[in-house]
Length: 379
Length: 249
Image (cartoon, one colour):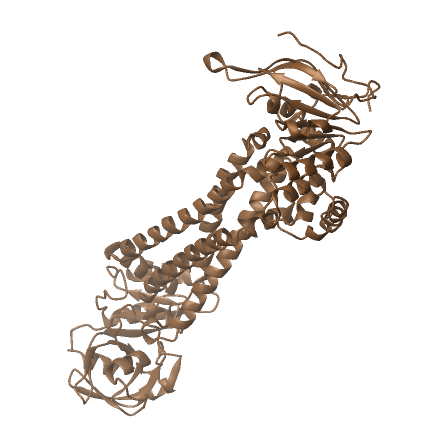
């Protein structure tokens, strides 16, 4: 009877395509909005995740997220290095100087100052030049998006100069840094130079990044650093989630996206669910005839579930294809780079679609189960 | 086949719907027999209980009281699942509005009872095509119901009712939606193809134009059988009681 069920489903092309489109549209909307939401939140920790050399971040106990830093004392670095299990620990500076081009174009930028000796935390994905050239005096590496922002319509080129708070620096590399939460240039320089690009303060050490010695688990090291220094030590993933949680709690982003996602969920799923339910109701007479002819309830339930799963599977596949195509296109756009279709969002959407289809199926099945087969004699 | 040749035996069968003030007595003590090898008509005015009676006989509705034996089986003895199986194996249905599945071709529609019984699709459809050919629809086996005339659709429905070789066929107003020519053709088909020595056919109809096909005609009124006639002077065994029977309320 599977064949009969599928032919019943596809027999009325208009209804069938309407049903598939409703589910595909719902899938696309949900995957699109949830992925954009998740990726934008992930951007709040882009600069943390780009530091692949270290696994531990040490900061002031009051620091809650990347943007909010309170400078540590230089002696804190020595204290962290003294914690058993630390293989190495180096300083990391974060500031926001204004970068200005000779043509007068300017923008506030994210400046990350790297340990002079090791350059730990340097961008590893380089499009032009080399991060090792940061050892040259007055040099910076800038990300591609920042370069395009400051030098619009000009080809990528090394050797250009920027003015950073009255310090002239030379671009020695162009990186493919992950997009930050705010679309500002991301620049890297040596620590000793970076602090000079901003006004000197008594303390300037934003973060200490560290790596555990072989055999020491990262969470164990963060616990030790916290206990022995009184500083806040987080793993990269913990710090990432600190940032995400901060934005979730203190900004309107989740509300705005939440409303969009909720509307997508309600509209998409209700339309899909109701369409499938009505499809079954319109076929009640046919199900009644099958019931009269001796098709039992279990078989009818199987037919309805097969119809539901088929249409949901096809609609979900098309919707996911649409979402994947969308993100494939936007991935190459500078402003939306790094925003990808996340598998978690696909899985979540799949669960939502499955839930809706199961609910619609249960309601449909209920109508069929209570259907009196004698009804078919009533014309 | 039972020794007395009865496919259906109803004794004082009653059926009511609802309770209290809304209670409706649809069948008020029906005594009715249908014999193997005969085409039995159930006739009477609208609302007299004809459809309710064939629904009870076919196992689609439970009776409220009385004795009912169909093909030698007391329907009371069957559980819900067994009754569904009984219908699937032993009863063929022809509906007034055909009730063909619009997405299936004629041959596929005919094959539905076989598919329900677990016959593989290819074999079932081939048998459907063969039966349709025998019923004069060889050139329409791949047509969808929407491409068939009313008479052709009803012939497909008859083929569907016969494909699994049931021992009882119940037809509800099979000619009601057809013009006189098509109705006559459909009823002729039923008389020639459906009626078999080991099969009983019960037809509910208003259509007096086709009464001459009947071996036996049971008239109903107000939930009772009021008269049984044998218009063609059938030589076989008549209904259990008499060829003309008045049943008092």
